[in-house]
Amino acid sequence: MAQTTTYVEAPDTVAARPPASARLDAARYTSSEFMRLEWERMWTRTWLLAGLELDLREPGDFFVFNIGPESILITRTRAGEVAAHYNVCQHRGNRLTTEARGCVKAVTCPYHGWSYDLDGRLRAVPDADRFSQGIDRDALSLKAVKVELWAGLVWVNMDPEASPLADFLEPVRDRLLPYHFERMWLAKDQTVRLDANWKTAVDNFNEQYHVDFLHPQHASFVDCCNAANLLFAGGHRGVEVEGYVVNPRYPIPDELPPLLRGSIAPLGMDPADFRGRVTDLRRAVQKRKREIGARLGYDYSGFTDDQLSDVWQYDLFPNVIMTIQPEELWIMRPRPHPTDPDRCFFDKWTLRAPVHGQAGGTDIALGTGDKPAATSVRPTREEFDQDDVIAGKYSMTITIDQDIHYLRQMQAGMHSRGFTRAFLNDDESRVQHFHDWLDAALGGD
Ligand code: FES
Ligand SMILES: [Fe+2]
Image (cartoon, rainbow, N blue to C red; front, side, top):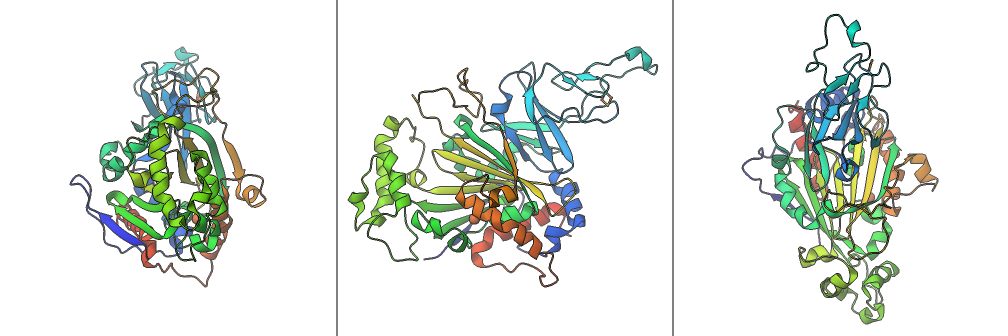
């Protein structure tokens, strides 16, 4: 009984694996100098998940992606394309919008009224004749950012020379295709302001070592002790955990624990059938989902048996954490603070697979395939502080709340004169892998 780690060989298009040499010194998480290096060499040169395509359904729809000191405006143009530009007016540098999302006919600066088309082209300047030097509309149009779509997700890259998104995703893309993220609808949109470096949050999701201690409830529905850790080129990571099982470190109970009893109820399964044979449940759930998936409204045809029962977490470099099941996807995304290495913003989107034939019109598809019903309402983003979670005013689910409790203490500890650097075990291989690729992005020094 042990976790495993496998390095998945890279396709030829992807850079070779860096040496496992990153040292997790405290300053990596606390210093402004390291934060500056990350900004100049990593954030501004890599593909970043900017948002969800469901926010760009119609021409004029836009959303803003704030990352560190930068703000990027993403629009659906009149021609139906998705465009990304720096959210900054070319007159005197005002932010064009402070709204998180919306729908506009044109992008108009609130300061002096310069107006840009949805594709970034400068279209109107008040008192244009008072610019006696002339107005060069090409030079004064919004500054573009590379943008690409994949699986209902909108990605941007601030490096004009960046290689295509497909190259970036290649090491993991095929494993994620069966889930059809682009068909999912948004159930919850949350952001918590954390007193922790963005990497303190990433590290938390990159090891199962803390699960037995911090998340005791997991012992009654997943097996983290035998997690399969996967390392991919490009710094991506995965971990596959068996679901509908109990933690084999403890005596196997005679009856299904309450969490498992609750989770099989929607499948019409009887907990009494598993008295004395709790370990048979996982295979039985796989079989049952195949049998009645269509009746429940789910399309399970593209999944392996393991995918039907298990929880996968796939993490894309640098800051995307995805917890994936056929019916539900969480995308979590810690974003660096503009100036403070001790703070970050932690986003969580909860997405659900469509249930065919479901009554009601509240489902919003993630991609552009099915249009939502006219009554569809996108959930508004809940924004709150770490203290609101600790006080129980907001929740990102029990598990994430438990993690959030500790992140501030982790960050504080790294400022201590009594701490030098992290000391990792074999099961924290994903933490090491992430930092090795981060070091490679930073140039190794
Ligand atoms: S700064 Fe935008 S119009 Fe003047
Ligand atoms: Fe955790």
